[in-house]
Length: 502
Ligand code: ADP
Ligand code: MG
Image 1 (tube, rainbow, N blue to C red):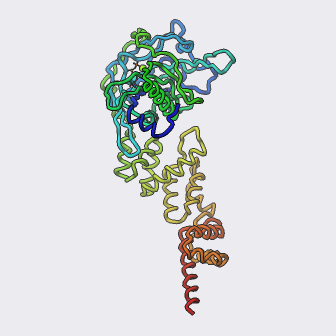
Image 2: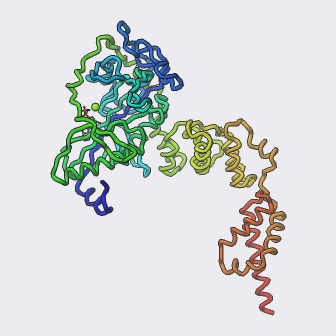
Image 3: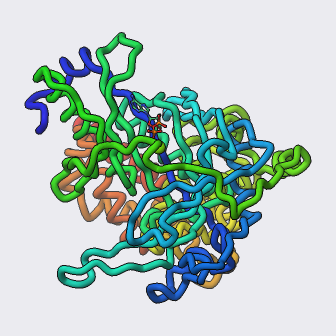
């Protein structure tokens, strides 16, 4: 079900407005699980080997709250300027599912740990949009039902049971699929920045449910909402929302009404499929968990966390624009990850050229990371190495290409750039006499092309430069080569016109 033309799309867009709210589940990277001492997030464990009696809900076991998970939640609350509860309370949320050992999930219902915060989305043009955060609460994850392991059977793996999750619920303040994807991307960036989550999407470290409804443009009433479950990538979130908006437009345009239901996205077909009518809250029979006593959250505790917070990405972004003069989109990309932002700032200070530092990091450094270690986002070049490299390219000791190559050689080593340059004989040649000599040779050998060059066939210069570079085994300074060639060609022209005068 796609719109036939962009015109159709535009017509729809002028008539309908999408309203979107996200529920984002963040796996916290604590050492142990939310209510037991089992190691958390042990991806190397065999199925069911990382689940203790508490996680499996054996009779007589009792939950004990993980302090770090509580601290993480308060940290996030501070980052979105939310109001932090004075007491940490847990409720039981009842539902039956084979991978839910207790028959209920320990969650927070009536008293989420954080309420009413604001998350500022940053657009590439530097403008911010405030997305209100309705609530943020702690809850435990369930195990996994695996349907494709054995034919006609479902197997259960409880290793994930009891993993601490932070659920972030936005108000329905988002209006387009891209805006929703941007919101998820930036929440993802923020929880990694704060050190709360590995951010590894392949391991399901962040999962998102998207709620979407339509309304007539200009109306201020909300329409009936559908919930799209378990979208585990930015791309799928965007695609699922696009499809769902088109589906709802078709339903409403046909005079029917949207059913309030839970749907799932099928990446293979690119469509959303109805799973079940949406549960009402009463069906969960929430009540306070009597096994977990209320835990007071003192003002001291909260203010201690607030004072130990790292500088937030939005503050850093502003500084990169104001102090270092970066373009807003560069500042944005550099502050998606703390290590990138730190590398930028340290490099900019050392080489005293923020623009070049940004260009090198967003270009070469990111490219090499992608090539060498697609799974781990580690950056293994230091600011000192990078700043040295930038300086050597700037002062002409190294050619741009050699510089780029060297990023690869410095990667994951503690080698000193100048050492490498010395031992590998890769200094760029800027000796003008030597360069003139090579250039003259190339001009001599290609006399038949000179008239074309004089006719303004600029592209031919690249060929000439290439020939000189070959003679110099890639070491000539291309800038000086171009100058030398231009000089020689000009001299040729004068020579020719003198001949004509005779
Ligand atoms: P429930 O309690 O049934 O899960 P909530 O009202 O708590 O529903 O909202 C859950 C999520 O759905 C929130 O992210 C909220 O922003 C979003 N939401 C609520 N109403 C709408 C609506 N009409 N259209 C789009 N999203 C909505
Ligand atoms: Mg909900």
